[in-house]
Amino acid sequence: MTEYWLISAPGEKTCQQTWETMNNLTNKQNSLSVNYKFHIPDLKVGTLDQLVGLSDDLGKLDGFVEQVTRKVAHYLGEVLEDQRDKLQENLMANNRPCLLSDDGVGDGGQSPSSHSSSTGDLVHGLCLFGCACDGCLVVGAGGRPPDDDRGGGHPAVDRNSESSSGVYVTPLQSPADSLSCSSSTPDQSHPHHVDMFLPVLGPGDLPTYLTRFQWDIAKYPIKQSLRNIADIISKQVGQIDADLKTKSTAYNNLKGSLQNLEKKQTGSLLTRNLADLVKKEHFILDSEYLQTVLVIVPKSQFHEWNSTYEKITDMIVPRSSQLITQDHEYGLFTVTLFKKVAEEFKLHAREKKFVVRDFVYNEEEMAAGKNEITKLVTDKKKQFGPLVRWLKVNFSECFCAWIHVKALRVFVESVLRYGLPVNFQAILIHPNKKMTKRLRDVLNQLYGHLDSSAALSGSNIDNVDIPGLGFGQSEYYPYVYYKINVDMIETTKV
Image (cartoon, rainbow, N blue to C red; front, side, top):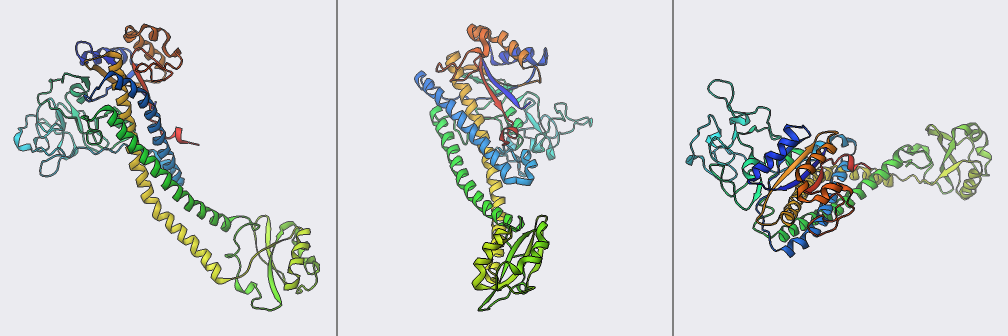
């Protein structure tokens, strides 16, 4: 399934307890879903009026960003044409991983010299936190899990946990365990707790980005107000949408011109360009009185043409007709006549279902036509690579922005529903096939006490439009809920 549920529930004594209760019921006991902690940072709350006003705007922004994301994916499929089967591998969420350089300094600029390793053969003694404690993520040297002295591998390493970037990342403690609880009180369980976020674990497919989501502080500073962050996303995606229209129009015009010319090169003899079929010796040129015309004759009338063409009008040169080529329906014939009867010949030939093509043999114009096709083919090839790269990069930008909008919506509605101080656990749920109804029942039983009316009626409430409670969505539950469908292939097919 490509559908995920992003929910939040109020923190109990701790957010970890909320997580464990929910995960035990849905995953460990009943195998209804696979669950992930969804980290939302401590954003600026603002006033109640601001949150209520922002809630509706975020709903509209959500729809707009998703629409642009799918539009970019769809157009990428169009541009790939015969390589459309490679669309999936080109739809990536390309956030950069935090890599350690040869001098031992990671993207965060931390030096390993101030830390000592206690976990074995780490890269320069650093984990992804920039320290070497046993509770941190461990990155093996050379992108592989470090082996211990017994050759059995590092005890903390799960060798199946290879990220899409080829770097093995192994939590002794899930990264979300320390940082995913949206609470006004930081969790100090990590021995080197700092007010920072885990680096994203490399470019990867869409489910990987979603399940390992980390807030992008560089693009969306958490010190900004919620409104400002929403405006940043709106402006960013709006610009991508405008650029997409400009680039797609230019490329489509180029492709359309090329297709029209190619169609004329390969279509029926009635409509195709004849320049590449005829030769100079087929024509009488530079004559004051005579001209050669090209006639399209149905194959079933070849005999009739050969026996009657000299009699269609007067002043036709006898035995001047020659079959140049034929396709499965028609043949292309030449015939030479006096210029002054050309129009009369066209008229009477049409009565017999012989079509005279308007064609003048001009070597310069024919060469120019061939050069135009070559130029269009070259221009298309030149634009193809940069356009595909632009679409891939900006699909990633849009998709990442979309998930950040989902995070904003969860944060805003959680504050409006559960109140202050901010204390809720955001959870990403991947329902197992054919278990969605049972999963929904379990969640309603677990959180029904938060809103008894919603628990009883579930999704039967039509278009709840109470600010801060439904954002106009048709599916309303006692817990905060948003659906995320990461399938960009099926939904982009026309």
